[in-house]
Length: 221
Image (tube, rainbow, N blue to C red; front, side):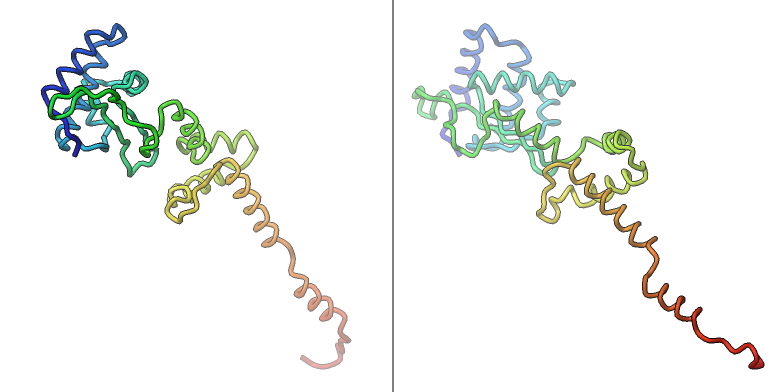
């Protein structure tokens, strides 16, 4: 738990808002939502957040607006945001501390780099990598299969197979590029079909030998 005085910290935040010409009402309501969560967790150094809960408290209905204002608060050093792209893990936030519990103003209120939080400027890079790791939905996969003239049924099978395995996470083998995995999936399917439809050489040899045997049609059946 950090040494944070509720009243002093909040008063300083409002004072900074008043002096910051960039601040809009949305920034303030979003900050207060994070502050409420921070207070409930006794001013922990890092808090895990739920986007839906924060949006509800901040009176936001648009995810785009939420992320836009959150980016501003991060860039302007009111907090440091670390997004999570895993559905079972929440994103993390470190709130900037303006005053300590004894009322002493802190020279550097922004969390220091290297505290296991990802700077916001890296978010897009991480986001793009995650888009390659797993498709947005089944429709994206089917469109990709259609572009490559692959059967739609194979696309459904591919999506169902990897979706059930959380795209490799359930086995510790995370998919780096789902399109590459799709290509290998189709190639493997074609190879299996070829092996199934290919005549068995051993059976053909036996049939050929049987046909070449001397037959005595004079023997009664």
